[in-house]
Image 1 (cartoon, rainbow, N blue to C red):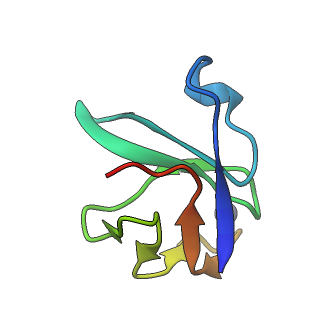
Image 2 (cartoon, rainbow, N blue to C red):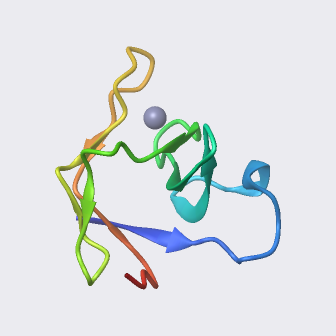
Length: 81
Ligand SMILES: [Zn+2]
């Protein structure tokens, strides 16, 4: 289990650093943006992901690109449902 740190509320998505998350918009929908701890790519959680009250994301986060392939169970720090 890897803890993803909560990015400070101020600042733009482009300032996300590896292993951080924040709320944001993707294609006009509210979503959760994750900065991949492995490669630093910022992407949105899929609609198939569920986030438990304690921030645990299921199923595991999988960065499905050949250049990365990061696969881990993650938990979002400071998550508030
Ligand atoms: Zn990655």
